[in-house]
Image (tube, rainbow, N blue to C red):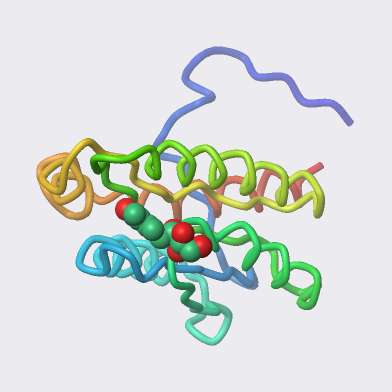
Amino acid sequence: MATHLKNLSDFSHTTIPSGKGYKIAIIVAEWNANITGALYQGAFETLLKHEVEEANILSLSVPGTFELTGAADILLNKRKDIDAVICIGCVIQGDTKHFDFICDAAAHGITNVGIKYSKPVIFGVLTTNDEQQAIDRAGGKHGNKGDEAAITALKMVEYSSGL
Ligand code: DLZ
């Protein structure tokens, strides 16, 4: 039966579903490990806080952000039991065009993997002008975007299972 959203308060950011029974993978890029490690920690702890069992969290690593797409694709192809994948990376602007290529490939790639498997594949990738901007978003003054990626995964699994 169709349900209707009554007003804007229905979109409340405080409603975070329980992750009990959800199986969630976190794939972390090793590049800028001081940042991605903090994002991973935030995502992992947020999943636990919202009742995802530790045994149901699969943690994996890949060399760089560029590899996140392929890794998510391989994982979802082999593991049909995974409900969502959180991709974590950090790309910091340098002197060459590498930044643009990696960010573009990751954004499009991660989107496409989610569509291919009809599963939430979350873009937990920082794309910053410098290291300070990344630090600020990995547990610094702008919070931890790993926490936000985990909450997004929980909301999207609930969205999917509620249809
Ligand atoms: C090569 C490269 C560069 C220059 N910068 C980053 C970065 O800031 N963040 C990141 O996650 N990865 C970087 N990489 C590595 C690429 O993601 C990838 O691992 C290599 O191009 C090999 O495919």
